[in-house]
Image (tube, rainbow, N blue to C red; front, side):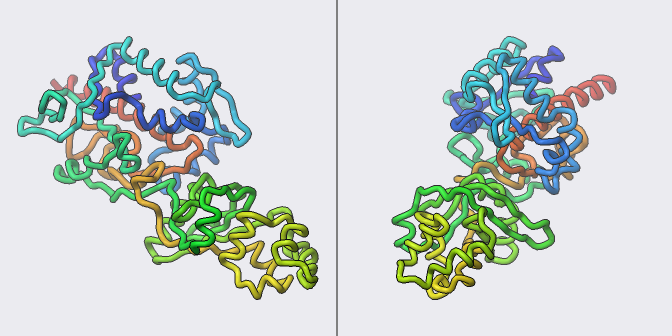
Length: 397
């Protein structure tokens, strides 16, 4: 995005990429259907950026969900709104869109250099790159760094840049997992039977200190080590922060959103019959499989023989959470270059002529198109900021 903005002004632009090809994380994001952005009202959309909304809102009001759709369409890809409100290109594929984008950039004069891993600066202020042919030094009038966070390092986001910028006095917030799974201490019986099973149509509730209560319906997946999936990613940030602050946390599940606690109690009166517990749960409220397994995992068995207590557990089942999964497994990362280290043009205050964009900045958002839109908006802003700075320095000269 930055390269495209700068190239439109006729400046020669060179993109240095550590991997053998461009946009690897973009391609992975499109494996399940490329979720470009979200169609919800802008006010709700902006609220997804949490504490960094003040810094991102001006960018997203200029280049937000509608502009994301227009960008895809000018590349030749119509978009549509899915049932969840998420926006996808027709065909759902990332690769064709990426190819068209790269071809457009190269046609505008952007040159790509692959297998160039950035090593920092030399004593002359030139950029250092590790390449298959050995170290290469490059002098540039201005630089945009878009180095990613710390998630999925095999795709290029290794976080190695943190040390390089901190050595130059740039303030960087520690990188942490975002949109991640969490560890749960499953019993061996539950793990061996239900790892890999989806838990559908539940309501997850969680209350973090000094934050609005989280209460959302959806689904997630049981893993060998804990839980992951869209509903877990949505609550990941406050859950992670609570674990860091308190060392412990629990989410609460309503396993049967279609029944009130009173209705459940009435139906579960059958527990006093001679039927087995599993039979009663399945026949009266269709609670079976992984949901029944979760209930047995965390509710005292003696309580499940009492209709009143059983109804309470089913509607509000606590699941103790141990810790987030490692940042390397996360979809995205929190932390990064603090906005306080940047001026209004996204230029590092300590390093004139060096701009930052994307996931390497200190912001986070849930999945659903918010991450991609935020990255695109910051890339565009950094490109415009670089042009503004070049104009300013040229006027001074």
